[in-house]
Structure formats: C-alpha cells, structure tokens
Image (cartoon, rainbow, N blue to C red; front, top):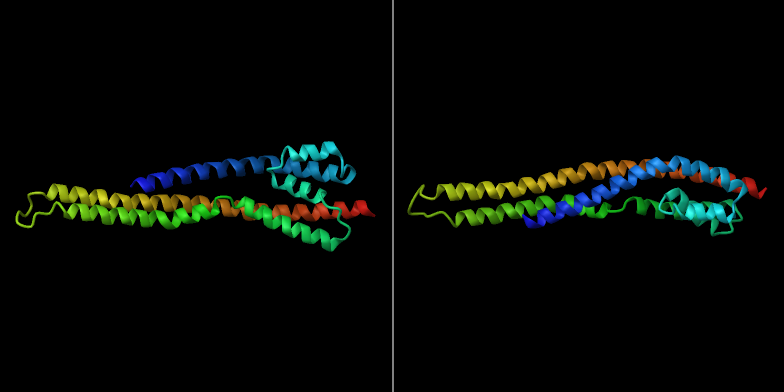
Amino acid sequence: MWPLLVLSIISLSCILERLLFWFNLKKDSNILKNYILENYRDEKNSKIFIENLKSKEKNPYAKLTIDLLKFKIINLQEFDELIESFLSNIDNKLNKYGTFFGLTINISPLLGLLGTVLGLMNSFAFIDIGNVGTNAKEVTGGISEALVTTAYGLIIAIFTIIFLSYFNVCRNNEMFLIEAFSYKLRASYFKNLR
C-alpha cells in the first residue's frame, strides 16, 4: 500500500506540473509567436529581441527562434535540416514525464495486485482449520483490505491514463502549430536574404 501511495503522490505532482506548463504555454504562445514574426524580419540580430526571447526560453517558440539565430543559414536545405532537428528536441521536451506516466500506468495495477496477494496470504494465516467460523471476522476483514489495494492500483492507473492522453493530445496539437510557425519563420528568413 505504501508504494502505491508514494507513486500516486509523485504522479499527481507531475500531472499538476504538466497542467501548469500547458496552461501557461497556451496562454503565452500566440502573443509570443506574433512578436517573433513581427520582429524577426527587421531586427533579426537585435540584442533586445534576443534578450526578450531568452527571458522566455522555456517556451518552445522562443527556444526554436533562439536556436535558429545561432546559425548562419545560407540555403533552404540547411534551414529545413536544422528545423527538423530542433522540432525533434522540442517534441521530447513537450513529452516530459511521459515515460514516468507510462511506468505508473503499468506498475500501479501490479502493485495493487501484489498488495492483494500479500493481504490474502495474511488473511489465510487467521484461518483455524479446526474451529470453523470462530475467526471469520478477521479473515473477511483481511480479504476486504487486500482487495482495496487492487482498487487503488487501478484508480491510479486510470487517473494517470486520462491525463497522459490529454497531454499527448496537447503535445500533438502544439507540434502541429510549431511546425506551421517554423514554415512562417522560414518564409520570413529567406525573404530577408533576397
């Protein structure tokens, strides 16, 4: 039961962190995207522009732009290769705790089942073969307590699956938007080179 409690607390804290991350990202991204696209054309190497982006470096749009500004890109193929590399890195960062959530989903029902087996073994220790019914209260109480761990394990797994699915949808949608942003950035970049 204790491992399930620890796992549920860690999982809940990771879920809350991700909810806060996605809320802030959705709130700030449109303003930041417009700021980047408006200022990237004219002030590509401006220190103020770069400093403003560095203050928001946790935002994937700012991170992508900062990473692009570090390179002197001369052709479209080089730009596309860099974008592909940066998008892969951003996708990994957006999937933060994804592996932990998957582990929680897989291991919590097993921990619950282990608790049930151990609880049943403990309940069987109360059975006195010679005296039928004298200690039925202890046996049924132990079985009831043992089954609760399975229920807790399943609740933790179901709860985590719900949020993992939501975070995956957010990640997929955001990656689509970041790719669209990168195409706009590419158009702006090569427009300035002409």
